[in-house]
Image 1: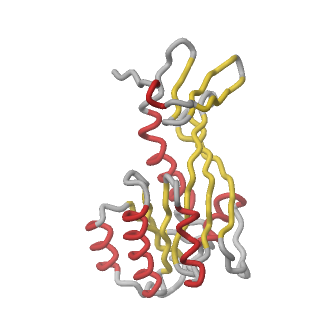
Image 2 (image 1 turned 90 degrees about the vertical axis):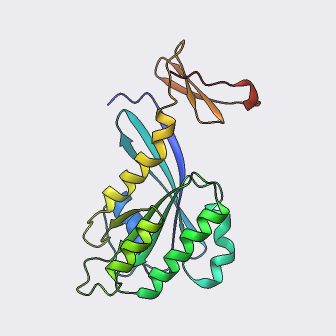
Length: 214
């Protein structure tokens, strides 16, 4: 792969406590699983990179605490996020209800173009207690991408983060144009390619920058 372009996106994981959010991140980044992983306090941060075609996508993952006492702080972590992974536990219907509320919360208080993946985790468990018809109704009604995962076995984990990376990068990849050895990167940075170096320059006045199309 020719590493000629890098996209960075902030991603937030939301959901009730003990649904396996931290375990999903651990499985993605370290390909490990821990039965005794402690509950997150406030939020935890992790970087992880994935390749989307000839583009490297760096995910800045914010894993938020699920306990109710931290709900007032969670909005600080999803502010500015380009992607949201909302997780519930297949054996816990209350976590499914909570996940539905998080979808409403994200859509009402975040950017309109935030990409959401709706995830049921712990599918390795013998009993799937959440009504599948109710899940399907909610997913279809809200036009969500839905993925079944197991952080314990690894089922669906790479697919989850890869699908989100593709969704987030699609619009930016379509804006990339070669012109005098320069490329544009979202609304904040201009990327210059100088031999093997990638230089990010902060654009002070976005009104002066124009994208050329077609």
